[in-house]
Image 1 (cartoon, helix red, strand yellow):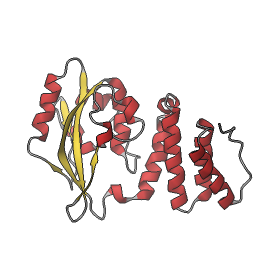
Image 2 (cartoon, one colour):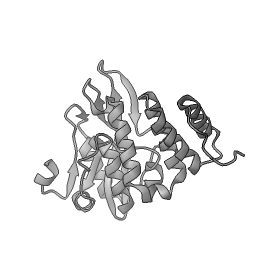
Image 3 (tube, helix red, strand yellow):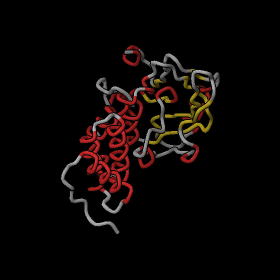
Length: 226
């Protein structure tokens, strides 16, 4: 609704319980101005803080920084761009249809999976946003995250087809989510799907075998391990 009410060529997002540091927007716009070529967005780093204010992590992970330009190959492994770290061209936002209103969580990842294939993305390598987790934060809901992961895999099937290793990685995580929720049948289906994509993975095969035994279901054909 906020994006629809605006008229500026760029859109920036801010969540109700998080903080921008004072020079966040200035530094991102400077990065966009300095970019050579067509750039559709800019993002920055973010500190994650618990209810007591202690830093518990950063996004994106330092292992993948700096990730700029064409970021799709990194983005398929997980979300690099939290919504409140993002500045996005309005025409791109409108072209991809904005946020998916049916997403229960991970709206930022879904948005960028649709936006990133359309152009370069700049990155300001500094933690200019503070995410403050509260008891009612969507991030804390494992059930919503599990639903969102499944929806993202379904909605971006063509993209995952080009990155089967990444798809298997997420199916493995979905299997773990179902297992933690007590749904062993759904967990086994996801683990079997991961095995079909990467049949030589001992990790995926081990989870499928464990879930198969736990659920007392007939054994699947998963290919031969190396």
